[in-house]
Length: 242
Image (cartoon, rainbow, N blue to C red; front, side):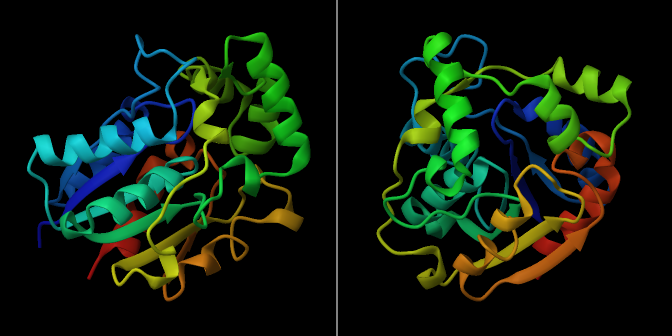
């Protein structure tokens, strides 16, 4: 059966980094799109772009490509974005898949779900870089892509781009909480993900906000899209299937 997947990248990424995952999904017979959100394109103004701009850009992408019955997959920061899209255009969606992603409550920002030391670091970096934030390499290496060797970690880091800090501080508006939305929901938990402290884990701390959801787990770090894209694609199919 052919399904339609839209893979939505996290902070510091673009759709291009998801191409290896998309290739496997296409080989399995599915239709796959990998858009880049507002705020992460080369010419985007990181000083002014915010969360609502990113949400609107994805809504516009779905409309421009006339996409329906979509399995909307969001990685990390993109959990904020796909939650907003589900609230605005639920009629286009079949299922939400959160890949170690933020699951916001109404009125909550991404920073509200992060540990204080991350918020302090992001705020300092943004203040020094015209409201753009970048992840330091040592944190990337040890906490985000801990299943990669140094060469892969360095090469992947070189593909990242500065992220608009407003997208982290803006508070999302939802007409109802994710748990109350009747759409199908899945949470894909990568088991070696150390990007969040274990005391503030992705799952179950954030996943339980979905209400009724399907849990799928696979080995890998927060950046398994670089280290094992085939395994991630297999897990996305498990999470997205009917």
